[in-house]
Image (cartoon, rainbow, N blue to C red; front, top):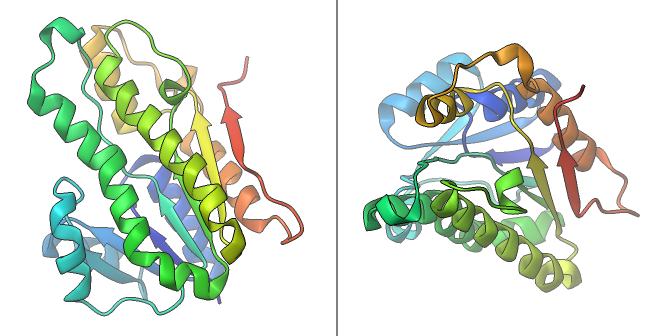
Length: 229
């Protein structure tokens, strides 16, 4: 039975991915920001475990994780959680920059650091669900893209650092996906939201699972997934 630690299990891509792994009968450890959220996860995904950790406060993660039981081996760490705030750089306050950098980049790096011994023990796999904004930037996307470019740098460095330990690192760059975050993006853009125009979360989840299921003699390092015609 594979052991997975997952952030962002509450909605969108993370929820579908968690459901797929739950249906397989794998051992799930779901990162929740508080006790209420953790209880909801355990109700939706019976038999799963939860880890209370506030990704918006990366400095608190080490103490929070040390205070809880956590798996001694981790086959995959799936970084799916994220936040977005759009706006021109001229109007983006420091708080928006810091929140996105903390949740999208610093927290995944710190959570990875904490769990690396368990990942090394399993010769595990780390997956960063990034964004097309981690590859190119459009107007009003500066602060969000900066956080996602940071995630790309973290993943690229980590891949080479952990190769001697047998830990694989994959970055997935989804295009626009029909999730609650995408609905928020459309509100911020002042555009009408039509979920049918975009990829479904299940398509991105399938991509992540393909990378996880690849035999040990190969490694998918980066995957770009875009809405179809």
